[in-house]
Image 1: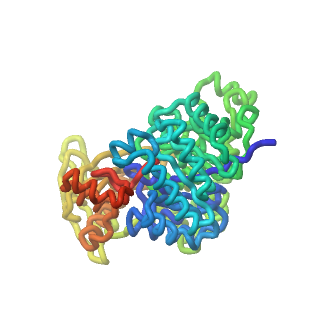
Image 2: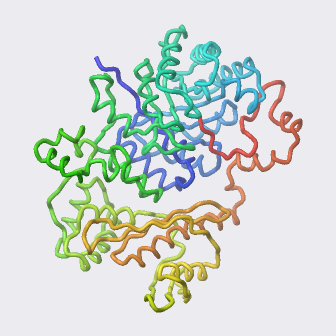
Image 3: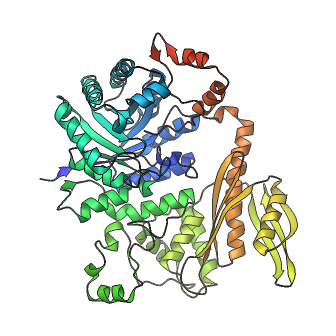
Length: 554
């Protein structure tokens, strides 16, 4: 009988720590609801003590999720555990996920602790958490570089103390499948009470082995896989949910596991994540990339026409990628529009349906036929509920190969129109300079990408921009049949996010994350003062590296 594997999604915690993938509360809740549609077993909603915003998002997700377990990460500290419990206690299935490092490298240089101190801290904090929550997961940070016998002692002790799940993370993506499988086997065979807890694996992708290592860990006896959508996360990311599950599904004769995940929601979940973060999915991304089911080679096409199994090891429908022959155009009604959007996996409320249908009709006046990719692009552009500080009113551009491009751009803010005229070497550059003049804030254009949504000459143009200033990196997306309009919409979307963050940081200093504040305070401390601040009666009270951000990766 196939062994059931629990899928633990940490996109909203480990994944969101990756640069450029941050989300606001509404976006996190929306993505959490999609994860529940995907039927993940556990949603790690965030790191509750990291900041007030993280706490509120974990609490909000806990209140709306009906079936999945909701977990919050916490260091092995009473104040972290208290904060995590306050955030998840209203969940139908709450879990506290606490961790401490076990490798000598981390103990010596990061925590300044002995092995016995870390052992005692782990045991006491698991007991403390277990008195609050019905489920407690313990992670041994940097487990793959820890002494095996010491690691086994810690695992045995935390299970005795009430841990119901024990996670063995490859925190820095250092191990290989053979090593990792051997480590999990060693733990399964050398921890006497290992049958009293579920063993989890959490692998990072620094050597491109996260999915392979996770599969090796599962084959060796682990029964929970910790992953993220699209493999996003710290540094090179985490094991990818879609790759892991489809590997199990496709090669079930080797990986004799079952799972609760609904694979037909993988494509929609990946697109939603890309939409929310405005980070495009690489065309060659396994499973959900645009090229995953595309065939250009003549030999491949001939084989596909004869039998799709010649060059496809899975079907597009298995991940929720459906083909449909219904054509929408300017004469299509709202009922047909809503029906097609539902078939594509989008559920629209009345307001969003009206807005997107109006956008659809505007596009339909300019295009003969509207394809599914056009509809997805409209949906992704129209549902970016970021801050609406500035809106595009109108623009006029003059450009040619014998003249300097000139742009006149008018924006609205609080029903007040502001206009600027700029000249530059190209029309898009002139528009961007005009926007910068209007908002009176400087930024650096880090990236600009323009692509056609479909193949025809009347295709929608999609523009993705990435800008930065002292407050961080901000992304925007814009879609239009006019590439200059799409460029402006994309920039304005990113600019609104930038202004929202800069103004909130000016108005509310308390929104700065806890660990960020600690890092700033500690940078000026001497080593003796730092150790005194970290230790009371020989017990570590803080597990934060100097200068480290609030995101702590396992």
